[in-house]
Amino acid sequence: MLRALDLADLARGRTSPNPSVGAVIVRAGEVVGEGYTQPPGSAHAEIVALRQAGERARGATLYCSLEPCCHHGRTPP
Image (cartoon, rainbow, N blue to C red; front, side):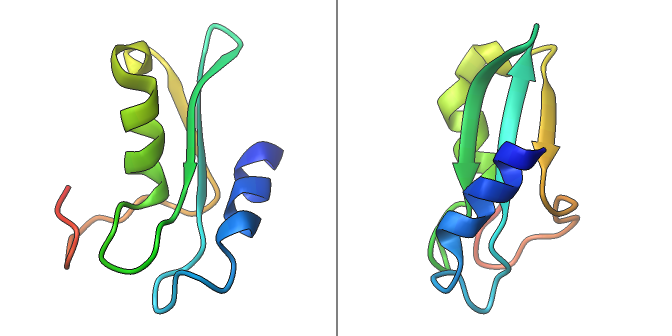
């Protein structure tokens, strides 16, 4: 979770009106994907991490510095 918070900090000031968020995907104790919120209209942290992890995300755990969105606006799920 600390890594997710560190990643969120990398996006600070560049994501408005969205919050800066970090996400880390861990499988069997190994980080297989990570990401942070991109500029408005681009991918959210969870999507960046999932894209990086690819198939390694199956059966893994996602740690996110903010609860995932339950809707979509400019960026569909």
